Image 1 (tube, rainbow, N blue to C red):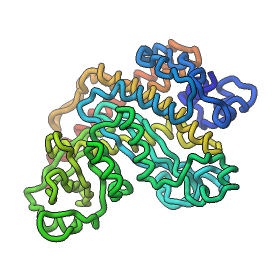
Image 2 (cartoon, rainbow, N blue to C red):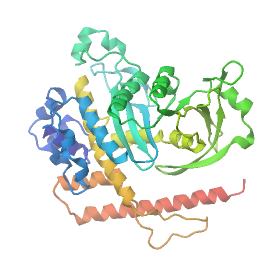
Image 3 (cartoon, one colour):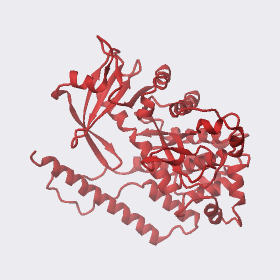
Image 4 (cartoon, rainbow, N blue to C red):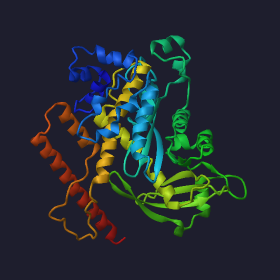
Length: 444
């Protein structure tokens, strides 16, 4: 029951989502129950009261409470259940990608599990905080976080007193970020939920053992690598990726491809180069305005057709994990917990992932039922009188859920704002596309 209250609070518009604010919203007299949920409670299936999912905002048949029916739970089993829910809905999409990346939460002091001065993507610099490796199950129609592992620095693990003070169990051993991503994939392979493709940035792309694990399990990948990455060629010693591009790419090798993103189509120039292996390729992306190059090392498993556009689409499905970070932090408080112990930190992440998964999958279902968007075809088109509405987004679904839990549904005022926002966003999208068309038709 407390877990249900916690998830429901994460899906509200509370400005900060921590133990105190969540407890107050839930109607608890003190934060004690919420703190016990995160720190000490035994997570069994009763914790995951299915009533929290049973609302008309979405088709609650998808959220069959039997999926939570385990005798004893820990946070890993809870993540597996979330993963099962996500893959049940998204697992039939033609292109499915496990996108991995890390995201951080800035912290003060040294009394939090995993905290140290390190590069924090959320800050864009070296800062004091905790990094967590996440995996997003990404498709062209929806995505959600399905895996998480907290990065714990070796100095905390080698200090028995500090390990005990931070609540880090004996089962936690030091793992690099790419090893944490591999651990997530080990679980997914065992469950049968691993997608056919993986996309990752340079932290993971330069790890040979990480790539070898994917190849050994028949998973294709498109991973970022640096310009100095050594590529095997048919003759001679390995050469740097940037040298390979200079030596073998011709001007006619480039293709301008447009791939759908969260903010519309993203157009880049793309090219690929073969390597000594018939299943490995170097995929290069060039920014159309700046000319900046990004390098991707690719592997196509046996039996999978070798298609240039498939690799391009897989590369672009790395972005959804960053969108999940944005949604998770801005909408659900992924980085707002004020807990310090390892278990509490992990449990807050799991509960946030559950809230995000509910809204993300509901948004995916709404998108599949929505009509095709009305878009301009020429730079001189004028918007039609009725431009329609975008499908329900994650943010809008979260707002509707908040109305239900506050027992003020139906509410004509908030429903009016829901419809107005969606019409306004549709109109803004239409003009955005027309601006792009005009830019494309301007003489060079």
